[in-house]
Image (cartoon, rainbow, N blue to C red; front, side, top):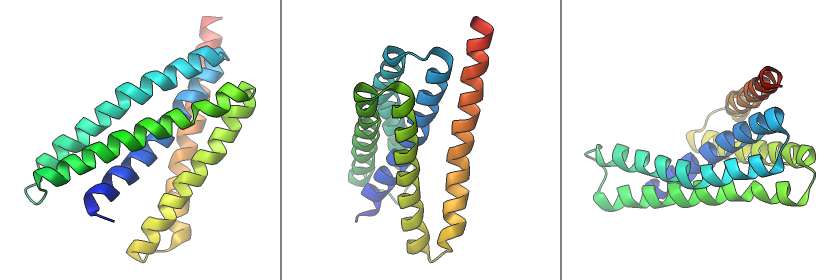
Length: 158
């Protein structure tokens, strides 16, 4: 796979998973509202996908080794990857009870992070378990911290 596309895909999937899980867990803990969680994810699918794509684009344009075409390939891959991954997390929320959907989405998100981590470790010939632990620990930390933040917000506002 071309490096420019791999960058966009790896970045966008990781960013979409971490941000979506954090947003879902935090909003669910603070509101327990399907409408608010879906609204948050839809807003993020648009705004954060475009923001990350522009961030990748500007970063790539600042690298003298990257061509204009490669910068655009990373930009488009980032937007598409983040946008559709974020939208994917809405489906369980539509069809399942919110609590169950959040648990399912966490499971799916951690599988995606594990798959990316595995591929990175394999490509770099590093220990797979170390890479999995490193990346999953960060993802779980985001989930725990947003759960705590959402719970605290709910307690303060009620």
